[in-house]
Length: 114
Length: 110
Image (cartoon, rainbow over all chains, first blue to last red; front, side, top):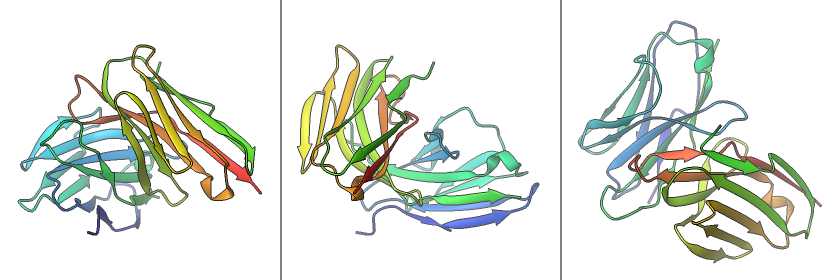
C-alpha cells in the first residue's frame, strides 16, 4: 500500500500563473482533504471532497478550487497565484464510513511563487 | 484566540530526558490527533484518541475531555525524535476536517 501520494513534490511558479496539485488517497479511502501550511504555522483547512463533490470548505478565496475523480484521487487548482500562496500543500485521506477514522497524510507539495 | 493551543512552541532537550508537550482546545471535539512532521514536510499520525491514554513504544498520549487538554510524552528522548509535533482536533460540528495547533518544535541534542 503506497499510502497517500502527492505530486509534484516541489514546484516554482510565477505570480499570476495557475497551478494544479494532485493527490492519490490511501487504498480504501474515499475522502480527500487539502490543507495549506505556511512556514512556521500549523496547516489550515482548504476544502474536502467526497463522492466527487466539495463537502466542506475553509476560509479560502474562490481562486482555490478542486476536483475529485471517480477513483477518489483529487486535484487542487489555484488561479492567479500570489506570493502569499507560497506554502506546503498537504493532502489527507480518510474513510467516510466508521466513526472518527484516522487521517493519513501525503508528503506534501512545496509551492514557491516568485 | 486559536481553537487549539500548544505549549511550548519550542523545546530543547538532552538525549534521555522525559519530554511533555501540551495541547489545550476550546471547543467540543470528537477526537484528537498527535502528529509528527519532519523537515521536508511529510506528516505522520502518531495517535488518535478520544479518551484516556494510548502508548506506542516510547510515546504516550493522554487526554482529559472534561478539562479539554491533552499531553504527548516522550520517554528516554533521542535525537531522532527531533521534529515538529502537532496537535489536531476533529471539532464535533465540523465533520471530518481537522483543526491544527501551531506545532511544537522539539530538538533533542546528543
